[in-house]
Length: 318
Ligand code: NAD
Ligand code: AKB
Image 1: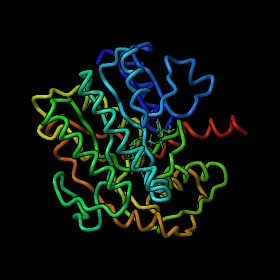
Image 2: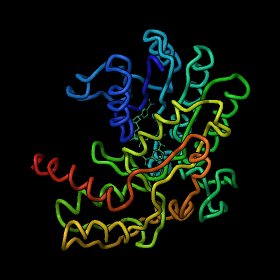
Image 3: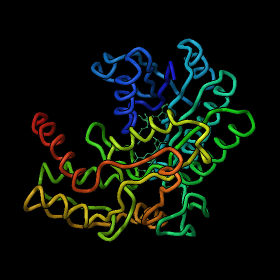
C-alpha cells in the first residue's frame, strides 16, 4: 500500500484509522475523504477530499489524481439509521461498495471493507457463531453487509481484486462519536457515567453482544491488509471479536472505576429487535489461524483506558 484513500473518514472508525495509517505510511500517503466537510483541525493533518462515494465519477477522479493503490472503504449507514432509511442505506452501503470494487478492478487497487455482526440473523447459531454459517439477516443493514461480503468474494474470484474485510463487532471508542448503530449504548454509557454518574440504556440489561476497543479494531484492519495473501483462505469477512458482554456487565465494570454510577433501562423496541437478531458471541478462530489475530483489550483494560481518555476531554469541554 503506497497511496491510500479512506472513504467515510470522518466517522467513528475513520477518525482513528486515518491517524494510524498516517503514522505508519506517512502523512501525505493517506487521503481522507467524506461526504461531510471536516473541521479546520481535521483538515490540517493531511490531504482531504470532499467525496460522495455513490458518485462514480467523483470516486474515479480522486483515485486517479492521487494514484491510489489501496482503498479503505468505510462510508456506510449503521444499523439503526439504515432501518430508518432503508432505500438510502441500500444505495450508500451497497451502491458505493460496487463502485469502489469496479474502480479497484480498473485501477488495480486493494480494498478493505468492514462487514459486521449485523451480517448474521435470528436463524444463525447464536453462541460462538462459526466463520461459515447461516446468514439470513432481517435488517437492511444486514442485507447490505451479506451482499457486500459476497460482492467482495466475487470481485476477488472473478477479477482478482485484492478485497479483504472483517466482520466487526460493536466498537467502543473515545475519539469520535458512533454513527447511529445498535451497539452505540456501549459508547454513550461512558460519556454519561463521567458527566452524570447515571445512564438510561436503550437495550435490555441482559442483551449479550460482541464488542471491541477501537485500537484493536484499527490494528486488525491494518494487520489483515498487510497479511501474506498466500495464508488467507477466507480473505474477506473474517469474524473478529474481543469480548462478549451485556449492558449490566459493562455498567458493573464502569461502576468499579466510577463509584456510585447507576444504570436504568428504557428499551427501544427497534434497536432491541436488531440486537436480539444478532449473535451473543462469534468464533474468530479463522482470523487467529490465517493471519494471527489476537485482541489486546479485555473489558477491564478497555474500561480504564476509555475513562482515562474521556474524562480530561469532557472536563476540558466544560
Ligand atoms: P460512521 O457512521 O461513524 O461513519 C461513516 C462515515 O461515512 C460518516 O462520516 C459519513 O459522513 C460518511 N458517509 C455517509 N455517506 C457517505 C457517502 N455517500 N459518501 C462518502 N461518505 C459517506 O461509521 P463507522 O462506525 O466509522 O463505520 C464504518 C464502517 O464500519 C461501516 O461499514 C460500518 O458498517 C462498519 N462497522 C462499524 C462498526 C462500529 O461499531 N462502528 C461495527 C461493525 C461494522
Ligand atoms: C451497529 O450497531 O450498527 C454497528 C455494528 C455492530 O455493525 N456498531
